[in-house]
Length: 178
Ligand code: 5GP
Image (cartoon, rainbow, N blue to C red; front, side):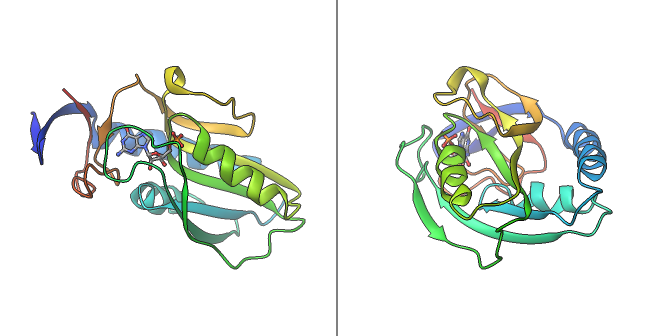
């Protein structure tokens, strides 16, 4: 069923049960890949807050979780290509195995920015896990992007943590702009 958020109309794209199933698979993969260490998960707020919570519940190896807050859309429907770094985190990642948890990789600028910043702290390894990827929108290839929930078209999406003008984050399914 279509839904309206502010001035835009959206239609369902990925249902909650499909999200659930895929996140369980990602969790199993991450458990297997990081069982030799205690990884540090860095969740990128705001858009990934539900994904981080659901993914972390699937992790059954010892791990640390921290958060950072970046913004690049500022209420619009396209990337501003300028990143605002709102909250830093306090965990020392030097020599640690780090997994960045993102809601969506669109142009790739945010992931690239964060990777370059974190690499300066010399982690042992660093990878990215993103719920969504828009391959047609990528401007920068992200070699570290090892886990992707769903590849989607170059559409603007909301729901399951993702917003339009700060609304729609509470929707259980993911919707795309009509
Ligand atoms: P990038 O830097 O890869 O262009 O964009 C990354 C950030 O832009 C994401 O973390 C997310 O906050 C925002 N973003 C990208 N595409 C979408 C979208 O389709 N919908 C929403 N709500 N945010 C998006």
